[in-house]
View (cartoon, rainbow, N blue to C red):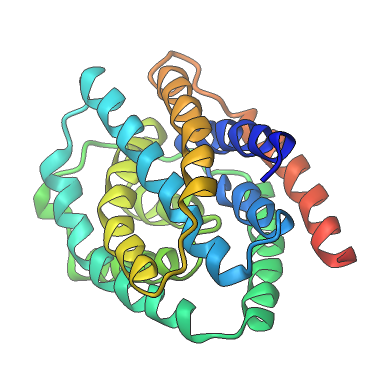
Length: 248
């Protein structure tokens, strides 16, 4: 690994951590970057989990210090997501590199389109345990399955379930999202480690940047205006990466 590659990992990790806390799409930057640096799609997919886990730790810690208090409900939602994540990671380890690359391109293109759709203005209310229906738990299993497989754009699914279905305000969606992602990504990372699909040097450099980006993202999320402009930054980068993937 060259110095330039190490700096790129830290820098892109920082942008991805910031985006992941406030919106969705950080892995659309980091996963292709790891592949551009020479890692196979399977190894890149496993290595990316190191950054996701550590940035989630940083974000959860910052949210808790800022006064967030949704740990119990987040853990309840995490249980089906963990089961889905293990299945998703196993499926990811079973597919060919060519198929994984095709799925990555399709997912990135689809996520970019979904991010362009306007969010409806809903009347939101606090989440209580009584509102967690079997359909919500099934949806969380699906999110875990998807996250365990590829993770890219998983924040969009959280917006669908938590904002559109449960009508939680978007700032609180981000709090639930990072804690649930932390819980379900840990077992997925362990599975990738068991199959020797993690390169720690790359993953830790990426995590160094993403933890700093997540910390900044928490400060913006807890502020009065949030960061709606983040999705436009994400979309510009996604288009550039998609072109690079298609040309290669």
